[in-house]
Image (cartoon, one colour):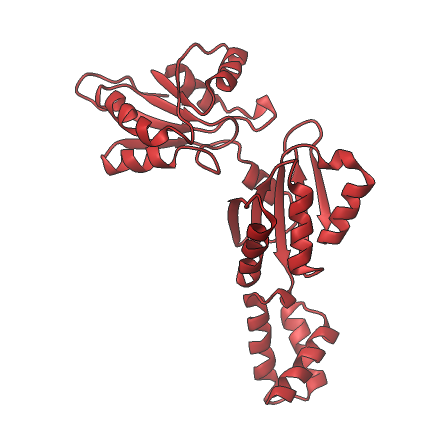
Length: 287
C-alpha cells in the first residue's frame, strides 16, 4: 500500500509493471498502487488510460517517453519533494526494460529519492523461462539494429557470449533478423521465438535459423505480433563451454588414449563422443 505523504516527507517513485497481454496478470499490489499514487507517469497516456478505465482507476496522468524523459526528471523530483507519490508505467510490461524511464530513475536516485519496484509481467522473463533454453546465464540485448549491416555486426560480437542471448523484434523485421542470424551462425545456434507472449495467439517456435525461416514461409501468420528471440549457441560458436571441454580433454589426454579420453569426456560433459573424438585428434595434431 502506498504510504500517505505529509508536507515534511518526500514522496516515492513506484516502478509499476503492467500486463503484456493478459489483463489477469495485473497484480493486486500494482492495481492498488496506481489507485493510491498522486500521479502516474505513462509512456503513452492514451494507452494507459484504457488500462486504468478497465480497472476503474481515476488518476492524474502525464507523459514520460523517449523524447522528454530527461526534461521530466526534474518535474518528477519536484513532485516528490512536495510529498507526492508518483507511479511510472510503460505501455506494457516492466518499465525501463527496453522502455523509457532510465534517465528519470537514475536522476532521482542521484538526488536521494526513494524508487520502489512493483514487479509483474516482463516479456523477456516470461519467454525465457518457457523456452527450454539455458537460463542459468543470459544476456539481454533489447532491440537490435534496424539495418542488416548493424545486425550482422552485433550478431558476430555474440560469438563469445556465454549463455542464452535474448532480444526483442517487431513483426516488420523479424524475418530479416532471423535471415541475418542464419548468415552469421548457420546451423550453430538453436533458436526459440516467443510470439505474442500471454496473448490469445501465443506461440513458441524452435529450431535453427533455417528451420524458423521455413516455418515463416509455410505460414505467414507466424510473422504476426511482437517477438522475443532467444539464441543458444553450440560449441562451434566459440563460447566458453568449448574452452571448458578442451580443458577436460587436455587433462584426460595426458594419461589416456584418444578414444578413451573422448569417451570419458563425453560422460563428464554430456557432449557427443564422436564430436569429442574429432576435437581430441585436432588438439593432438596441433601439438
